[in-house]
Length: 296
Length: 338
Image (cartoon, rainbow over all chains, first blue to last red; front, side, top):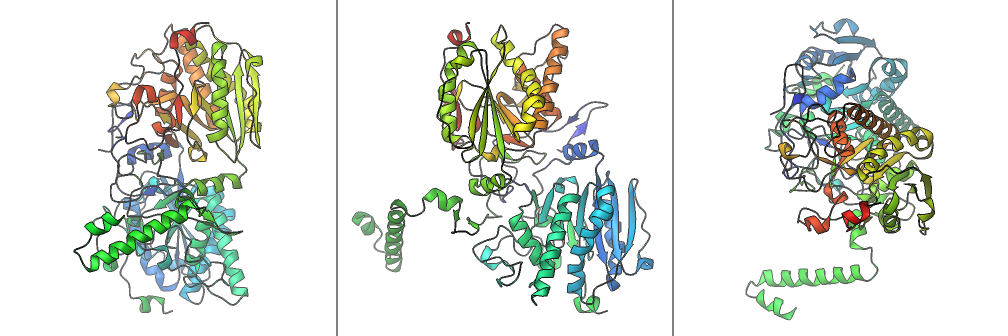
């Protein structure tokens, strides 16, 4: 169905059918014509060829502070199986416990870079800290080393294909708990005093902070803007209800993403089961004891 | 109205609800008709004084179109009515002060098409944005003066017309390519390259703009690829085998960023030159080479046949919600004779 390659010749694949929608149950294009990436909308072979031709390198950032290092092994092992296979990948692991980073066997063209950082006192601080750290490293390192950045939460595992179909200048991911909700029920920051404020009659989607990315330049802009907004809030004695995620949502309302990932790319099977509309569960929450893991 | 109410009686509670609903609908329609924001603007978006653009929430569990493909397998949007919000897009492109160049070739008798082309473009093409019409012609004196909106201008460029219409058609590739470097790169952000024997009859806006776009040929959007009129002789540079091809694009409307259009037109020109040296001419000339190029360099947007239609030939099928850019009826023999 995807494609076969004739010896030394062109990639062959089924003809796209203009009079047949790829999905009849979900929206696959935002009103500003950004693709919403669902299974069935894309051909992996065509996309892989496009991105390999440009020798694309993808950076995957993940923060493992204090006890969260325990998630690294499964994260990296499953990434090796499912994340950007066949392409050049650099994992950037930010941690305060570099010795605890596991050695995981890596495929060709893939490497792990461990970067030491101080962990903020509360999990909310760690979460928000990611914005300033990623922003700083964009200029310091990422600009020269990778073409695209994918910024992910660590308490997750890959269980199906996550590939170059997600790559574009700027992408966000639909929060799995809100993709069917009315915008007035999105958990945006609602207090006008916060920089992250979004009124109830506005908003496109509710994006989750656990997976976003894009070109290094765009991720730099996003993380810098969120960091600045959080600093202003802090100076004004207010903290957005969902921290960096609230600011991410404000940013993506003003700077609309060029691709939106469906909740296939960010799921919690324990919480949400497996609805018919999800043809694949690609990147899923690892069951954890919240109290336990967040205590120092 | 009274009759409708009566047919709804017999359902007690239901009836009064229906009545109220009906009256509300009438009230809403009346309000809409009396200077309230037009239905179109409510659907698209309204701007609160000095504040954010407001528009309906996109519905994740409701496809925008249930009858057509709106995304290519490489995730390029296929632009159909109902898939996009003009207000959001206009805002994005105005923020960048986008300038669009529209190239058109009017050689010999084809100058007769210019007036209607430009007049209708003024009504429907990129309204509200900066536009430069580049009119390539061998009869500059025959280019009509058409009243232009603000931020819009016509540049007339003199060229020699090739002997046959096929030559004129193919010549466009080398001319556009040359002017990309000479002029377009410095003057516009995007290029739209169109046939002149056409008129605009509905909105053609920034929704089409992207690094590289082609348009689905209106006669082939439902056809199997083996029936596309690609060049089939392996000797030609435009050759595409019967088991390959995504779509059949029409040569009458393509475009993109100046850089990408330069690449496309240069490549097509080179391919045509090689063919000429080898004593072969592709079956549909520049269009054949355009199709080969877009197979190898997949467009970042594809325009539906709404953007290239012939009502005389093809009528008005249900799947076309708008006919935006349409062929002007012409006598082929007459217009092609020098």
